[in-house]
Length: 148
Image (cartoon, rainbow, N blue to C red; front, side):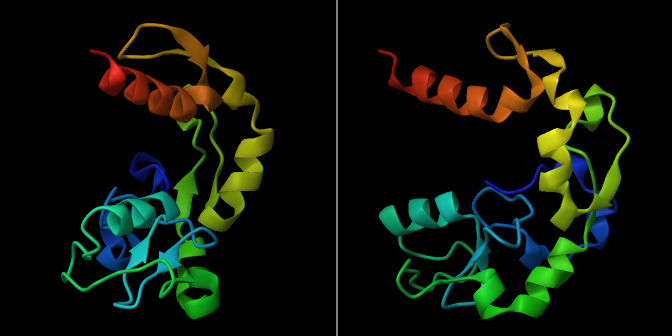
């Protein structure tokens, strides 16, 4: 999955091509995949498209993993431009005031003490650590869709 859109400063100024057509989040430059039709995808989203429709949601062109390349290999200038996007820390809702380029956010968030702040899941009510929210959400979604 891409970067949390709520953490992007001046999101309205970014080009639509910077966002994955499946999850609609800003792609991480070093994790983004560029397809044959030049659109950018998050790795999991491209896998989903290839396993389902095999058609790009933007233009309907056939997309394959074999014909796609990591963005940093196919268009380094675009990867650098996206990496310069100014963002908040992923834990800014817990109180972190860091802002900086997307390219530095992962290293900041790894060490950010606000990632250990307790939060309550709005779906199941369980208290978890902020840095575990995404993993918890994925686990909750899998559990809720497999229950009879």
